[in-house]
Length: 211
Image 1 (tube, one colour):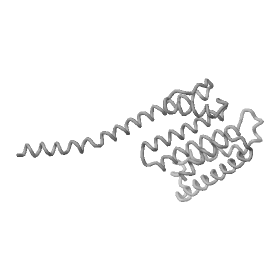
Image 2 (spheres, rainbow, N blue to C red):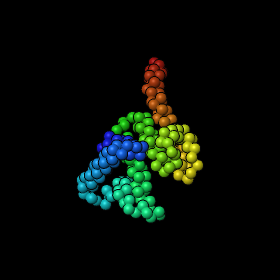
Image 3 (spheres, one colour):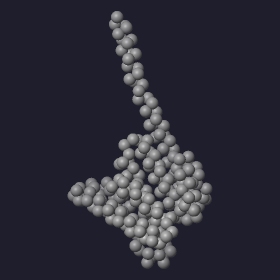
Image 4 (cartoon, rainbow, N blue to C red):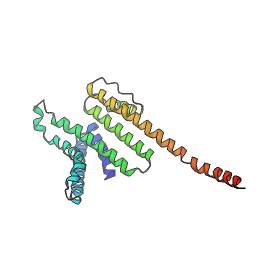
């Protein structure tokens, strides 16, 4: 399921940037197959938990992410400008794939640094898809470049629209958290050998004083 979660993110990306009708149709079918697998896996976990209230309190947000992509079926309501359900469904699918991708990276990566790199890559991909899907950029390559730059450095998104600004703040905050986590991880790695190096000196000095 972890590998499927990461693949689902690229399937959603393919649906977003593909231009050939046959490829778009194939990716759409594949995306819904993945979605059905995720729903089946969630229902299986709910069954194992005997549909207890504790399970639903813990997993309510997963229900939302599973239901939001389903809004794309309601294209007949696009005439109501107040409810752009098809667009909401597409953005929901991107957000759902991004969240699932980060969780999948956490399951697959054992090293903290590897996990951090994988999650950062997923965040950059998901953010670029959101920027492109909302029309902030006409080119996906530009959206990917600026989203990746902002995810790493905290600065890079040049669009001045409302959503890109909010996403810019979010990614800048994330980049600070990434830097702090990376600094703490590297610091712990380099300091790990200090006690073992100090031990022989302590024991030597103790034996000298005993003599």
